[in-house]
Length: 386
Ligand SMILES: NC(=O)c1ccc[n+]([C@@H]2O[C@H](COP(=O)([O-])OP(=O)(O)OC[C@H]3O[C@@H](n4cnc5c(N)ncnc54)[C@H](OP(=O)(O)O)[C@@H]3O)[C@@H](O)[C@H]2O)c1
Picture 1: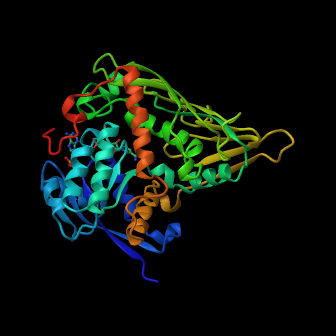
Picture 2 (picture 1 turned 45 degrees about the vertical axis):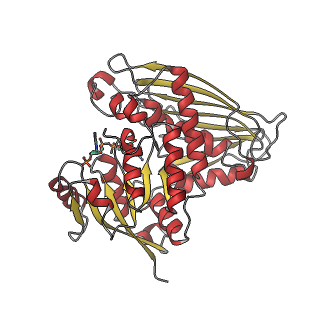
Picture 3 (picture 1 turned 90 degrees about the vertical axis):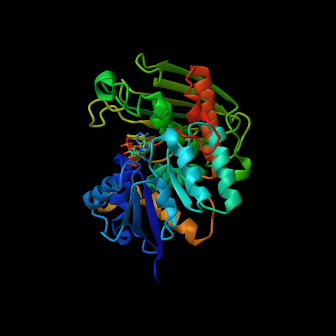
């Protein structure tokens, strides 16, 4: 069978664009994905075509790839099937709109947008134009995540009633991030909630929400959040969120099934201080018949344990290595290829509705924590110069 081939256009030349491209260039057969293939046909930098050319040569993309010095040229390239948007989250709304308006399918980095209103508008535009759109939450497409969702759905730990999830870096914030870096710069939608907390929420949602049939999923019935704001910029440097969901999973029981979650993120204390996993786990999924623990980092876990309640089965530890020395971003790219091949506009593993609900949670967390961003990056007016 000839693999279904997707022609990618890469928008931006920063750190994650580099990692994504290196994964795209790996042979799909090395991860048992012989039904799809990927080719990078164009790269664009907002600053210059020279910058795009350098990116092409540094990452080892074929020299037949086009190099553009503007995103407008990229989205006008007839050879591009799908645009990967890898700009700071402040720019996602404007950049994705640019691609959709030009008739391009889009894979957009997390956090999807700055707020839920922007996310809704992107999804409405994709729907109207019959284009594929997906938030690039790569972790959801790991075999490890698929296995854990299946375990929960199959009742391996009974009714899941509580999830504790952390994604925290222990950084010397002033020295490492200063005031201008996108991690802390409010003009670039900085702060740990949108950058790191999205993964803590991803684990909460993929275990307590996504494991129910789509028509039974209900948004959190209560959200409480505390934020600590970085003294130099006002972006959040620590955020803790308590959530309640109206029912448990996998049986959708209202009584005694309400489930609760704690989602945490922090820039100054770490989930894994000695970087050798002594502090494990990063995520605990607790059910009536036992617990699943996942060692961090929450965005790229490699190992989990099933710990059944005493007398209910055997302890098991499962390793999930990354094939071909890859980072693991190729699985989300394969999902995009399969969705395009099958004529889908959205991915079942992260439907538009779920991305929007998570953005709504982050809006509420920011409201409670007092974190606002400049009006122009919260705007739903397209085009807006930012
Ligand atoms: N999935 C993951 O694991 C992961 C990891 C890290 C980051 N991310 C996400 O990916 C996105 C980019 O993060 P990154 O770490 O790659 O950032 P980065 O290294 O700072 O790169 C961002 C790139 O965006 C472009 N850009 C366009 N306008 C910009 C502006 N006003 N300021 C700064 N850069 C601008 C620049 O490339 P050109 O000007 O050359 O186009 C820049 O190199 C963010 O949304 C982040 O949350 C995801």
